[in-house]
Structures are given as C-alpha cells and as structure tokens.
Length: 225
Image 1 (cartoon, rainbow, N blue to C red):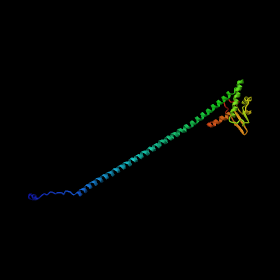
Image 2 (cartoon, helix red, strand yellow; image 1 turned 90 degrees about the vertical axis):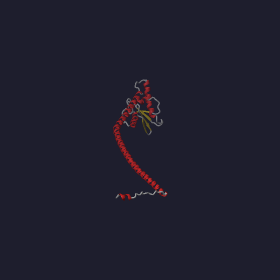
Image 3 (cartoon, rainbow, N blue to C red; image 1 turned 120 degrees about the vertical axis):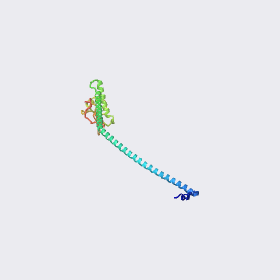
C-alpha cells in the first residue's frame, strides 16, 4: 500500500451498546444466582459423596477390627478354658483324695474318742467308785438307746455282758438282756415288730456313709467287752 492509500484509510471505533433495560439486568442477575446455587449444590453433593465414602471406609475398618478382637478374645478364652480344664483334671483327684483322707482321719479320730470315752466310763479297778462309774456308763448306754422311743414300746434292751452286769442292780424301765455279740457301749432295743440298732459301730458306719468314707467293721478302740 502506498503512502497515499494509507492516508486515505479512515479508522473507526466500534461502539458496543450499553444494556440499560431493567428486565435484561434482572435476567442476568438471576442467571448469576442460579449459577452460583447450582455450583454450591454440586459442591455439597460432592462433599456428601466424599463423606459417605469416608464413613463407609471407617465403618468397614471398625467392623474388621472388632471381628479381629472378638476372634482373638475367643481364642484366648479357649486357651484359658483348656488350661483350667487341664488344671482341674490334675487337681480335682488330688483334692478328692485329700478330702477322703481328712474324712477318714476324722472318723478314725471319732472312733478313738468313743473308745476312750467308753473305756473311761467303765473302770476295772473293782472299787466302789469304779463300780458306780461303770454302772453309770452302762446306764447311759441304756438311756441313749431308749431316748427316741416311748418307754412302753420296747420289749427289752440287749447290752454287752459287761454292761448288763453293771446295770443288773439298777431299776430300769425295761428288762436288760446280756448279748455276747455286743461290746461295751453297744445296745440293741428289741421292739414288738423289729429292733433298734444303737451299736456304736452302726452309728459310726452311718456317719462314714454320709461322709463318703468306706464303712469298717473295726471295733472302736477301747470298746472291748
């Protein structure tokens, strides 16, 4: 282009119209508000989705930890149960044997005490006091045998020959019969329809049975005829 042509070109400004219509401005403002609200809602939805995903992940992790803890607790309890069962299997027989030994020793002691009491209540020195004490001990045997009975029911009381001789001069409510099968301190009451066994050995055997100790036919120490 020549200088002359360039000088002939006229440059014109472009003028943009100014929007001055109120309705147009309101529509523009509404569009801005709707755009902002839409963006805000989309942001909330995205945040809610992230929150839900985080909650689901945390709940899954918590459930997994809880299951693991429960499994570990169950395993530990099973181990403790097995250990307790093993200990009881070892200790229980020992305790049972110890209890049986204690009960047996207690019955042996009671047997010895009864024998001593019978022997002490029946002196053999032949003195007046000794005979009186022996008669008193034998009379106690009769009273013990009759304690739970109506005095009009018994037919007779059987005692050892020694005890029968000791109470021969006493006025008793029922006849006394000497029975060689009995020992001092023993008594058997004859009834119209049976008998009452008041022997010392029978009473001790009942106690042994109650304690789970094997009954014995041994004679109480010091309770010889």
